[in-house]
Image (cartoon, rainbow, N blue to C red; front, side):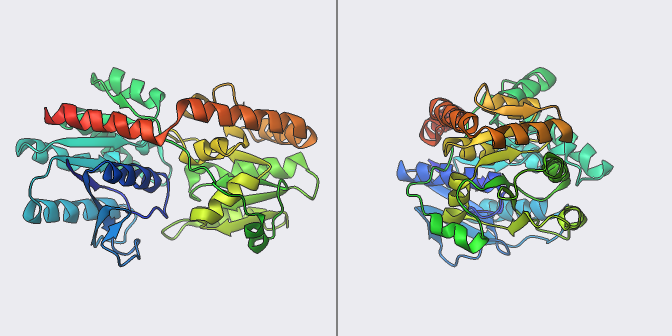
Length: 370
């Protein structure tokens, strides 16, 4: 099959969950003999190579504005595809905002799949107009794509019941560290099992201020740091705000954007992992932490609780007091943290696997073409 993937920054993955999904799935599709093209944003993907692990990369421009970057790049990608590509079997979009182009593609009989990353219209970075647009695009996705894909059963059920379509559920997988290397921690001034880890974009819906507040309230042993990995791609007053709120505590450290082997080592050697987001699908960061044997605490939204099952802890939504109590409990009971880390690893092994996901996706593609 000739498969074209549109709507993310591109690969190799260095930007977030969607890019990691595209990276893992595209490489596996290519290994199975399919022709995969990923459209990349030129300003964000720096590699000069035309292929990455068997996947063709097409790098095109975008408007560097938060609200227009995705749509502008998708427009240029589709223009390139329609003008220069032949024998297009599947166009696979990522992100509900790209549904704007689906009616036209349906009109010209192109086969389309769209991956939905949670409830985009609930993200606090968007104003009212953009939220309204994204909510409309959710309906477009249901009406005009051949298949809607969600990586959360909770999100799948929302689309099924709200728009009357049968959404496909595909689980994501973890990135598992192959060989431990504690020396990587030295550059971050961290020690094994001596820090609590958060990984994600520094944007309002991640509710990192709740984590910082809870960490301060817990008044933990000074040997247990709070390490926050991530950044933002545009001017971000929220990032400035949370860094300012943490400035009075030297044990709260911001590590910036960390990718590849380095971030996997940070997962592997953390004491516990925390996911504070209030808007999620099935968090890849959370799945990866669990897959690497970490005890996890999550904000108690349904999507996070779906991922952890009985293999982790959750606190009442956005409640810093409950989070502080859980932090204190787990720091004081390392055996409990270790037990739940093992539970988390087993749960991921049982429910989250990239190879199975790719096989299911191929079946979806084949069903559309037939």
